[in-house]
Structures are given as structure tokens and as C-alpha cells.
Image (cartoon, rainbow, N blue to C red; front, top):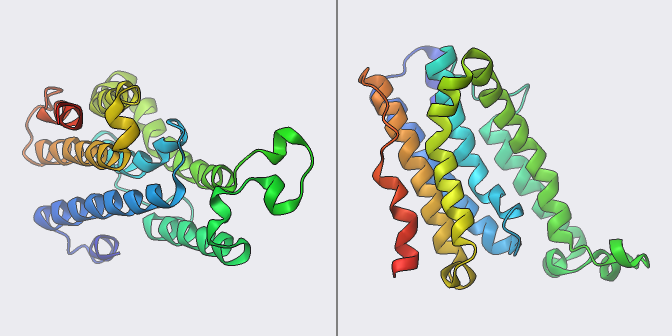
Length: 224
């Protein structure tokens, strides 16, 4: 909200923008870690929700560079509203169905007899409700970048794809099975790292390089 207020009042500064976005990405990393502990998806593709918020931050920075437009709101929904929607969603589910309901399946909660539907766990339903919101933000920013220049969009988004691909490879390791939280915190911070690198190179008017030490960091849990 402080960044939004600064932009409206035209009182922002490069330092303030770096601090604001850096702290936002650290906050979202912590927020997604708690979310991951709550959900325990046990499904790599749904677990990408835990990375998507910081991926969206990266695409917002790309849009600012390529389209000269720093717009953090889609319609009436911004980052603050996203947090409120997510929090409300889980308070309602937890409050109405009980704290343990997320690990229960639909058959246990609602007495559904159809075997296919009855075996679906509530946490997957709830998580899937939030995923489309993140996808809309991703499409809004990345889509505009692709329209502006597909080649430049791919170039600037490549570091995020590399880190997410590393995460996919790590999903087959023993470390992933026992230290999922640490790995997703590491992946989130790597995405935050390349996003800040993108921001700083843009501010300094330097050429953006795809070479970045953040690609090595996801290997640390494996080596440990």
C-alpha cells in the first residue's frame, strides 16, 4: 500500500521502490511458506501456487521495463486484495468445516458417494480457487510484454523459467520429499533475487544479463 500511495502522490524514489518491492517479495515468500505448511499439497504442479506471487512480481517489473507501465492492479484487485481473498477463503473454510477439513476429502465432509469426486481432498479444491487469480495477473503482465516483443519477453522471463525448471528437477530428489518448505523458500528467494537484479539493471541503464548466481542456490538443499 505504501508503494501505491507513493505512486499516486508522485513522491516515489528509486530507493523507495527497491525497498518496497524487496520487502514485498520477502513477505510473500514467508506468506507462501505458511500457506504451504497449511495446505501440504503433495502435488508439484499445485505447489507452483507457492511461487506464483513472486513470479507475478517479476512480470510486473518486465511490463514496467517493456511497456513503461507499472500497474499492480487488475480491475479492482491488487496485491493487498489478493492477500485478503486468500485469508478470507481459508478462514471461511476452516471456520465452517473445521481446522482439519483441508486434509479431508469431499466424501468425508459432504457424504458424496461418487468415488471419483469423494476422494478429492478439500485442500485441492480450495487451492484451485486461488490459482486462477494468480494466472490472471500473470497473463495481464506477461501477455502485454509478449505483445510488445515476444523475443524480449522470453529473454527477460528466462531466469524465472530456469529456476522453476530447477524446482521441477528437484521434485525427484530425496531432499524435496523431506525438506519441501526449505526448497520452496529457496526457490522464492531466487526468483526475488533475479527480479531485483532486473530492476537494478533497468535503473542503472545497464544491459540485462541472463547469467546469475541465483541459478546455483536451488542446489544448496541437495548438496546439504
